[in-house]
Amino acid sequence: MPMIVSVPKEAVAGEQRVALVPELVPKLMKASLDVVVQWGAGKSAGFLDAEFEGKGARLEGEVFGKADILLKVQPPTIDEIGRMKEDSFLISFLQPYSNATAIKALAARKITAFSMELMPRITRAQPMDALSAMSTIAGYKAVLIAASRLPKFFPLLMTAAGTITPARVFVIGAGVAGLQAIGTAKRLGAVVEAYDTRPAVREQVESLGAKFAELGLAAKDAEDRSGYAKAQSEEFYKKQQEMMFKYVAAADVVIPTALVPGQRAPILITEEMVRGMRPGSVILDLAAEQGGNCALTEPGRDIVKHGVIIIGPMNLPSTIPFQGSEMYARTVTSFLIHLLKNGTPHLDLDDELTRGPLVTHQGEIVHEVVKARL
Ligand code: NAD
Image 1: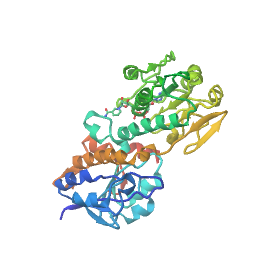
Image 2: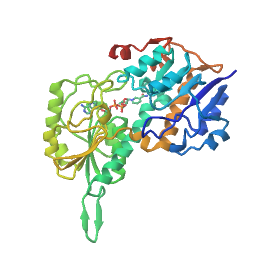
Image 3: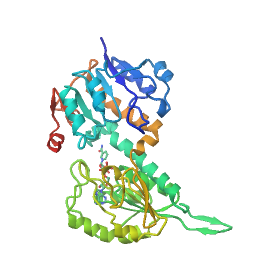
Image 4: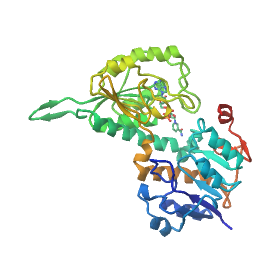
């Protein structure tokens, strides 16, 4: 009997993506899996049941109980975990550092769960890099939201009614989301400046036509082996705030994206810095889900403080659900295919790619960092 890979409709409010798209069904079938999709699972992303069926998937009303392998976007709820088969496999975002209850419940149910956030950032894992895929969406959408809220144009315009000067955008953190934000803001015609603690980023910022902000700071051990930023001292962040004051004050839009994996986002924009901005300016805090880079950000809310619009969006990738699903589904499918041997997941625990995202297995929490945090 082939193993059943199932895809449910996401239950979390506001989540519009789905973990599999019709074009990938034949790929899973070719890998000897039976594909079962819940009725309406792709509807809010623009993928109809008939399209899944047309590619060979079976449509059912309840998919948790039969799944040998479950593909999800959002971490399963406790209720969903209770409906999953013991000893089954789960591939999903799991929010592994802040989701103790679900991770313990997955272990208790003997589910082998992989967290897409924990995929190692190595070349071999690039097709499975769900975080980068979703950051691309977040960076793009952040600029569109900020541009639509700013009471100004982005581009330089020469009109009979006068010359319009371009908006100034300051991007803090030029990782995947930040670079996408820079590119999008440039394409809309803004003048863009950016800063990152990792010196290697300067060239990438400049190649997009933006200016790298000269803060005169030297971050200590700026990045780890996988290219992620390392946390800096409180003293460093204080200095960074001081040195960024004039860049923030001169900007019409500030898009902070600075993250340190597994930690609260560093505060880089203080209330005093917000006070220094012109009324009507916009801060679009892409670090809101990790607490925010601006001290005044309220995650999930859109507020005005000292005349400055401060937006702390949650789950931006879900706002472009069509490609959000396509991109996510490709990373998940590539990972699943990597795990399979003769139609069954085969766990080579010596393989960095398999071991890296593995959180629970055989009733235990096996990821050391996650275990320590919980
Ligand atoms: P991220 O989302 O964890 O962080 C966003 C950015 O914030 C990073 O560029 C980080 O350096 C920056 N940052 C942290 N603290 C800061 C501070 N105080 N001030 C300014 N900026 C600060 O990072 P990410 O976008 O997921 O990835 C970061 C890097 O990882 C990439 O640019 C790349 O080099 C590497 N990466 C490698 C692969 C791969 O090889 N498969 C895939 C994706 C990313």
